[in-house]
Image (cartoon, rainbow, N blue to C red; front, side):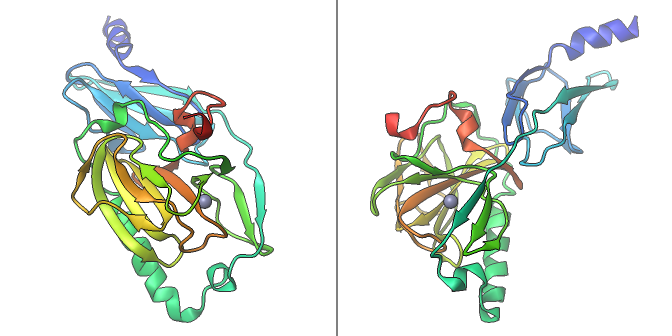
Length: 265
Ligand SMILES: [Zn+2]
């Protein structure tokens, strides 16, 4: 009897994939249910909405723990599609951006720490539930997850989608949020802006030529937030848009219908 009651209640958790590496997964819990993913209890909206991200290398099976109001617990398992990531060779990058001189290592780690810190926000805003729009117009020139080789030197994977566009072109907010980080000049990423969409979901925009908002500002979907540039480790003007669920990297492209291109916006 207990088991069947359990089953009925656990089925009240609804989840929206896609169950693929790099995906943002949203779901809805029933009143009183707690949802735990990777040891972390997920924040819920007043309606029970929650979100989590499947990283670039998420395993083939992931589990969610559902704790019911009566204290009983159930584990739900999901298969995660494993992706093949492309390798991209990039030549002509300034050598100081491929193998940075020792003198800048303290700066690089300080900047990385500040960016990591901004992504720890667990704001209760629910902008992550909105239908995202592309933050810039232009052809896609880089994709999530690709292995990058700079001037022949293999580097860590690329986590953003790159949208080519002229320097100074508008970058708009893909969803509402609050600005948690803004800096005109980071070593690798140049002009860098982070907008928090709530519950750990954030957008990071890099290589900007100009930032049009300040930390603490609330932005609405479609607001002008920055301008495209080629600052930091970039070979030409483009917008690199990254998304995170806390420190987990997710793929912005998966938020759009398959084959949708920003140029069509
Ligand atoms: Zn990029």
